[in-house]
Image (cartoon, rainbow, N blue to C red):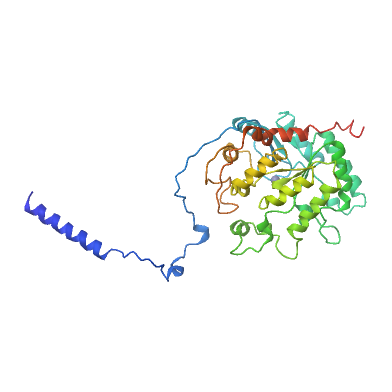
Length: 386
Ligand SMILES: [Zn+2]
């Protein structure tokens, strides 16, 4: 080894020792100045989980699926642009989705257009629901007219009635008062649904956080900042509990009508409450559209809920029928994977979900059997009431 090389090595060694000596002292007390240095904005915070876990992709459901909560190519344009129906069907085939229920079909000619576009060319692959025309709420013959509108819709091919959250939170009569979910003007319509054997898919209230202030304690803070009109906090709106009470009153008053309480009866944050309702109202069932995040963050309680009410829970997504979306839901229902992103993360909140590994007999019921049982109750309109 040359002396020049030795000299260089020696210098590097000195630098090395010096850098250790002047390196950071590991402190065992938190920095009192930390709050001043934490200037990263919440909107820019995107931590990557460092946990190394098994990933089981489930691109195809284990059993054929009926997605009972969808809006693809609907009459209201809820999902935006129309997708070529053949493309929708190809995506369904890839994911093992046999039928999609398009809830927002409106009525009359608009309903007809959805039926012509989706149901006629693909029989069995799509089911369309009709809706009420709230602009007629002040009409003295509202109940009779809505009954006729419903009969006309079912005659055209609608197989259920969808009620959006605007009943309770948006529909007002001419006095400016919000129309209650259990307003008596709707009683004949609920009864007619029972007579025809068609289910009512009803969305009442919204996540619990939407009824609390949009502040630092709100777990859906970012979602509410992005969508300020989704907040129903304050005196302008009835409380969540009041609205749910009104909805449940309808279930009790119309025991011969099947009600699908959408979004896990809109209280997946409180499965004890939903369980009590399912026990109390035999004509009520639920689906979990857009509530994968809520159920997925409480996998043990949710699994218990699925086991107990396996005959009353239906598969729904409330999302565009993208094969990746379906794969995400199937992974949650079928695997034991831990701590992964729910579909749409972090849109609803900054938490991740866990798989439930539901047994086959429960999966079959949730994926299609429960929905089939409800749709089998449809009575041909000409024979209904006989
Ligand atoms: Zn929906």
